[in-house]
Image (cartoon, rainbow, N blue to C red):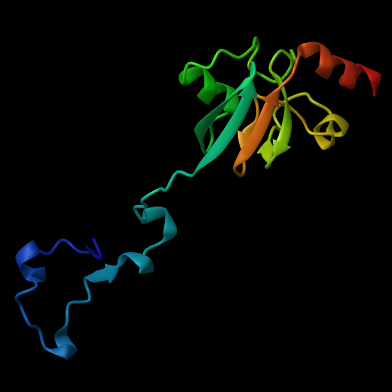
Length: 147
């Protein structure tokens, strides 16, 4: 798909076998790169990050695709994690972020708790490979209520 016809001429008029002179070369094609960005067709590469989840004395490793949350992927893979609202409000899916980075900007966890490594898995989208450890709801509520 390197070249795209830009006119209504028949495909035969644009055939590779035809050898127009340099001065009369068909100007009815242009490279994909020369097209406006909105008209280009893209192959989209979806990034996935490795996430190790420590839960109930064991560790499970998951591949979490870009745009998915850790909780969503864990549940899809049969890992039973505590959760309720899935909106980052109820605090029933807490974890400690041991390594890596996540985006949890859609949740209600305050910046101080995030800075201390707390995360809500329902709104945590990995930005890198991560290690998380699930914790009790009580632990995160103590942190949020005491600060």
